[in-house]
Amino acid sequence: MRVRFAPSPTGHLHVGNARTALFNWLLARGQGGTFVLRLEDTDDVRSNVASADGIVEDLRWLGLTWDEGPDVGGAFGPYRQTERLGHYRAHAERLMAGGHAYHCFCSPADLEAQREVALREGRTPQYAGTCRDIDPASARARVEGGEPAAIRFRVPPRDAVTFTDLVRGPITTDIAMIGDFVLIRQNGVPAYNFAVVVDDLEMAITLVVRGEDHVPNTPRQCLLYDALGAAPPQFAHLSLVLGPDHAPLSKRHGASSVGEFRARGILPEALVNYLALLGWSPGQGEELLPAAELARRFRVEDVTRSAGVFDPDKLAWMNRHYVKTADPARIATLLVPHLRDAGLLAADASGGGDLAPFLLACVPLVAGTVDTLADAPERLRPVFETPRPSATVEHLAGEAAEAAEAGRQVVVAFAQELSGRPRLTRETFREAAQQVRQRTGQKGRALFHPIRLALTGADSGPELDLLVPAIEAGAQAPGHVGLAPIVGCRERAAICAAALVGA
Image 1 (tube, rainbow, N blue to C red):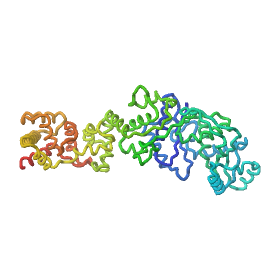
Image 2 (image 1 turned 180 degrees about the vertical axis):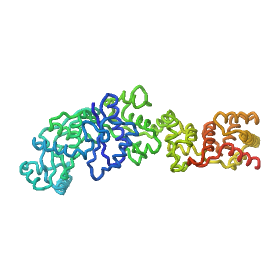
Image 3 (image 1 turned 90 degrees about the vertical axis):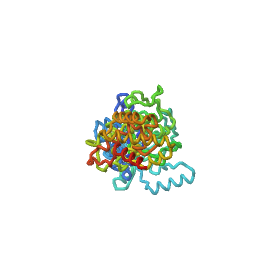
């Protein structure tokens, strides 16, 4: 099996195209095949190097490595269409020699006039065959004389073109709906339908998996294979990826490119797992599966014809799972750009060295609780923000006198307990809380709610035995790591206790 992903580098990698790449990759990896990356970069107006580099980077980030491609080479290269122009010209000459193609001298203005007439008459625009019967020798003389000419395919006289789609079944197209189409434009650049056939033929592609928008192209490509004396590959056309409103997924639905999801803190394994389930099921009622297992089970014949509806909530659920189960050191490193964006880290701060203990202490607060790592700074706000003592005073003042006095005693005892202790860990915080319980007789909410108020100024928030180690790790971080100043638990409790005593 030889499959390929052939993006046009004219923009970012859309998740719909990423799913196409993924399905091809799953087939190759699961069935011992070869996965080819080819860049269809002949659109000299829209194609650009930055887009090509971005697509390659996004594919690598997803883990979709290829066996042959522009950067790794291979026996069937080159793998950029702009480096294959001689290949297309040679095949076009071969088709003309066999009577399957001819030179067309119609100008763009002539073709537009034909198109407008067809539209006015309610017909599907189609080439009128103006140059079809020009004597080949005369046509070549005109070309050699410098007259601009395209090369068109001569559609054969037959009734229909039929191919079997592995997803959609047999598809038949009336030959009358296919006019003589361009193979090589006047500027020497191949048209899509011709270039893709030459490329897939020369690269020995056995199965073409692509989006359903290519279904109308396939009959033309089948005709070209016939004219070239070659059997076409198998075809499988995937339904589009739709937004929650069942319109094609686009920016108006939020993130729609791989780069956007990456920037928001979606892990690649979460996005791969989610995209694999858009139009396909691994069976056995399972959804959370690693890429290797997805590849083992994937069969293109099991892909549904129904459109895949992108569900951001399900992706968020998957991402929470993968963040929770990931190596904490990896998540700690991935937090850095999001903390920088939120102004909580200096722009030049990195995730290693003296900053690492703080970042690792933050991971338990984030893992399993945020949809994306971009949500982490808000989740970590209580670590960075020093509470106003007045918030605790005001809150306790609003409670019944007995409860208010009990809360005041807890905060004062907590401050006194911390004054003689080094920075807290998860374990020593529990020890300190137990000491406060023994001194005040308070337990449960009556014990921990005043402590939370003293440390955060809020009624609710992350679990204290997770929050406290992060606060303390931040308070101990040296200034050179670029971390926004963090006031430790001892200082927070002391400030709050002083305010309560003086109130």
